[in-house]
Length: 420
Image (cartoon, rainbow, N blue to C red):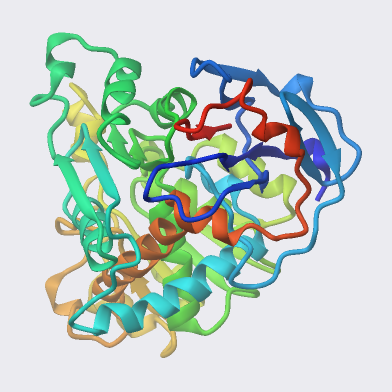
């Protein structure tokens, strides 16, 4: 992986007296993020932005030395140690090694969830769930994940109406306020790109729980995790993405992640009015991923390991109700589709569903969508475990280099937690 394709994210815990931070450490972590800004906080506590163009490249690791960026060769990561992530904004920021590491931790979370006493590893931490759009599974699974790991939750489920956004407050001001009450923000927003704005503004981790028709990276993580658990492999699979592919953030993020694997073929099955957009097709082509558009769900279903159905999203059509009615109900997974599917294949759906999967499909063992929803708990437990400061700092590879001048009190006082 070339350094030119990488940005970094870094959490430093320097001379910290905060009781939640167990170790003093300074390290930079590698994060493959496509956006072009890096968050920082200056020695005086003011938020700042470091431009990507300021980075110099001499290897694969970006190193911060008392305000100066340097590049050092990165140590290799081991499974279970790999994903030192900061914000989760887009599916493109994950590489295959990172995905494997996340999935390994998620599997360990299954045993914690089965233990009625849970875990206290995140005791003392607060997660803020800031949702400007409706959610059931995403919000509740994040909140369940936090509580099962011993943390607490501050929540608003309709921030668009029942927060100061209704009074005209900017997203940036809301983020600056909420970060003062919490240790991590999980946000869903109705505008594509809102998660990036929040991440650049915040000095604590931000997880994108869906930004309009943009992306839903944690859904994509649980989708790929589910495919691996159900099919037993990720290389060489055939996946049919069905339904609203133009407005569906889940299928966009899933396509990005599937491109990380070898010999994958993706079929796009959708009404003409909601076809997959060209940016995803171009991305897949650039990565050597074979894709095909089809109008025949039965034929595609007979070839695929995964039929990934989605609902037609009425809320994205605004006043164009005629186009919504044209698209709705065209492709339905029912008993006829099940009959042509292979025995090992599965039906997935990010939920909620309307009528695009008939209820009589639920009893078929190939109906994986409720197991898929449960897997969201494990993936989100894994992300929270490694996002909060105590565990992020302890996860850094000890071979990472840092400059002891960062402890100089003229740069940082003993009560400041600085996040670059």
